[in-house]
Length: 230
Ligand code: SF4
Image 1 (cartoon, rainbow, N blue to C red):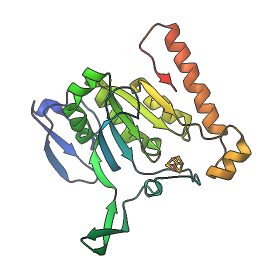
Image 2 (tube, helix red, strand yellow; image 1 turned 180 degrees about the vertical axis):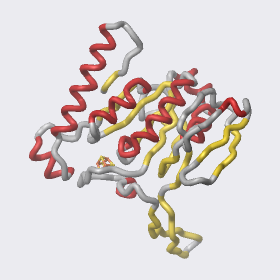
Image 3 (cartoon, protein in one colour; image 1 turned 135 degrees about the horizontal axis):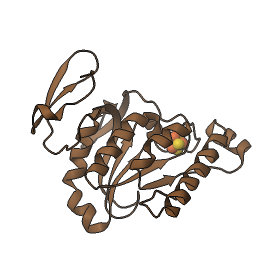
């Protein structure tokens, strides 16, 4: 079997995970029902349970690190680099203030995020919620995103993707079958202003938005479960 693949037939309760390089990691994944899924690591900078502002119902919001835009209003600048970072922060103890190093970003397997989502599944079902992948720009780690979404759909968890739309169209094609809802954060309609305020043209973003809307129309036409775009 090629490196990077899981053979669940080895055991019902254990998967052998071939990570990058030749090291082998054995891990307990009792809830994964998928066969031959590539187990990937990605870089996360926050996970928020019981979120109610990132899509319908109660949600688990996973913030992924890395964003190719440079919005001047960005309120999560620590999310922009795809790498783990050490930043200085201050902590107050009594009257004294200490400067400490804080690491922003940590690696997780897609299966570990699934486990977090499964722990909240009863709340999702009761409220019509699910998982939302946000950032940064989640499509910056599109393969990791595709794997998380695929795993969640296998477990009937509603999936949402909060995106600026700035990624190659084929990346969206890859996640489309597993995404119930796109929260499409179109920054500015005017291209010159978009360049001025985010550092990039919005041409690709608008192309992706039209593409997703077209896909939704096609799926509606077929009367199949469909992706929505807001
Ligand atoms: S798209 Fe979001 S994360 Fe990226 S720079 Fe703009 S505001 Fe920040």
